[in-house]
Length: 284
Image (cartoon, rainbow, N blue to C red):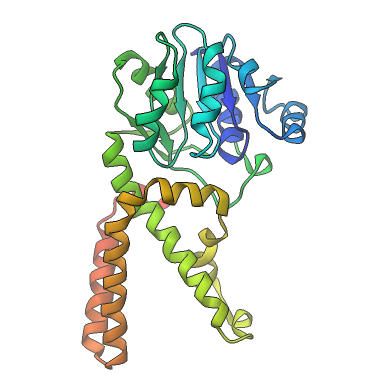
């Protein structure tokens, strides 16, 4: 599918892109770059990538480039790499917010390169190259956004499908609104609970079971990564976060007033909303 893929950023997602691309046989050569020399050495030694170098070095001769740094770092990384991009190169990303990136990144490219936004919905609370997996994208949704170069969009779609993803097409604005509901706000709620849990009785952890672990798992995610994501998508997060707050207040009032029927009705309504999900969606 490609002669040379350059993966810029070798954390969980970048490392998984490299491993999955090798597994799928979609490139002759996979090169990688990251700021941490120890990570680069480990990626090369463990066969995650074939070549290492600086951001500028590894994109030379690459016909496909995947930006896998934090959202906030992507513009500067692409600005550094852009002068070395070959004619016809396609650049995509794995960022959790699309609007700001689609507005900024295409303008950093040379005239004969194309940018197509991507977002594989396949992350984890774990971070770093050691958490990377070649099967991370299997049957996971991956959003690919609109772009002026239709041929480049189709090649990006084909890439993610080769890695096992179920590709969904969205505009950048639609992506950001939808992901705010299904990913960003749930993280915010988990962090809010985890922060409030500091006031719980000291022995409460001793009685915590599976439900506690399931609910708080995503609260262990990276502060650096998610601080960037949440502030970048602040406009789309505002409305669903307000709606969650209002619903939580309604439920709290019903509990405090001993209104059993209202509590049951709210729970039943919530169950009905979740039951409307497609079976394939419930995995992710």
